[in-house]
Amino acid sequence: TEHGVYFCHRGLYNPTIHVPMLVHWPGTVPEGVRVTPLVSGVDVFPTVLELMGIDTADMDIDGSSLVPSFTAPEAPIHEVIFAETVQGAGRAVMQGEDKFLKQYGADPFISGNHLFRTFEDYGEQTDQLLSRPERADELEELLERWYGSNKVRQLDSKERVNLDRETAEALKALGYADQIEE
Image (cartoon, rainbow, N blue to C red; front, side, top):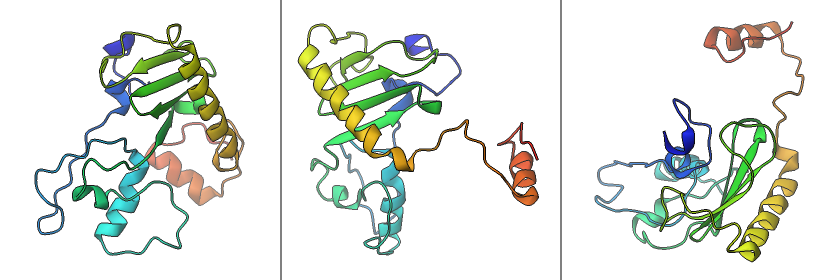
């Protein structure tokens, strides 16, 4: 119920995007290690690949393996983390202790722009947008640069795509596409 969000996981506030991850692999992953720097969901894939002994050097994958963090849990992994809501209506950038949120479209889970100190104000109740405008501007510029540089990898969820019958039926059967036109 934080920030008026009920029964949904679409927002950009900590209760939605701060997801604990437990890794248990006896003999491979040391017990009791808690990684504290910023990490992202995109780090799971390269982490699993490295744990399995698969070389990712020639792969174009997002994220960074967390395996080095198992022996150096305080070492930085990312300088910056980005997140966005469904259909890109809201986006966030986290750097250090600061998180900047920006509304881009109509979304009931974010309104306007916000700046929070996410570790000292985990519930994100004290908006510092007006008291720290320079930092908000700096993070907004970083967010815009990231979004613009990744345009080629983004998918517009309203973009029409021609699917073959087999793929369309498979998506319908899985419940992922309720309005596929053939």
